[in-house]
Length: 222
Image (cartoon, rainbow, N blue to C red; front, top):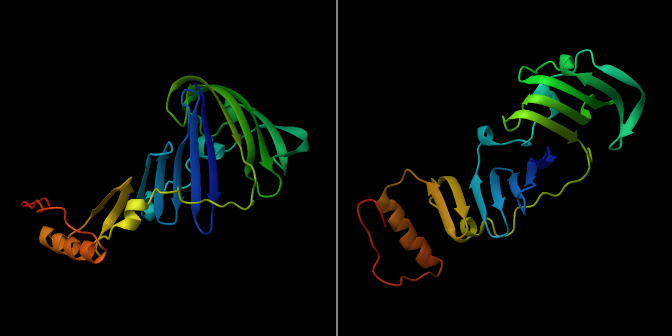
């Protein structure tokens, strides 16, 4: 079973895209965040968008090796330094004993390349046994991490048509947790049903919509 993740990240203004592929699936799943909007894209015709608060941001979806395993203590330095992914890096080899946060690892061997200027991980390759950190599955696994195009220009765009309902239909002024999926718009409001009903009767008519018949209105549904 193979899982591949591509992460694109722009610090300012904040935007990111995580693309996930598996060997068993024909297509890819995308998670995109641009400012305060996030998008989940599953295939060409399936997309959901929603507003997001700072505490809900997924922030560069896949953790880096140092976030998963901590630093490398006592790793063996390999000379000379090498240029990897366009970055001059120090080369290290290591085993389980060198991993500072490896309580779920029973055996490991691998290599790491750390940028000479900046100290960030450029490439990390490890074979191990134990609990795989991204899925939690037990067994033998291999992790390969590559950091590419550091400080390269990226243009992360909203998925086409994903926000069509949010753009087409008006929302109450106090709307929160706004989400859209296809032609459906969803959000929360503290306004009463009568206030929401009056808002849409007024706003939809003003936008050129007309009624096709008598509306259905109950105590909690319209």
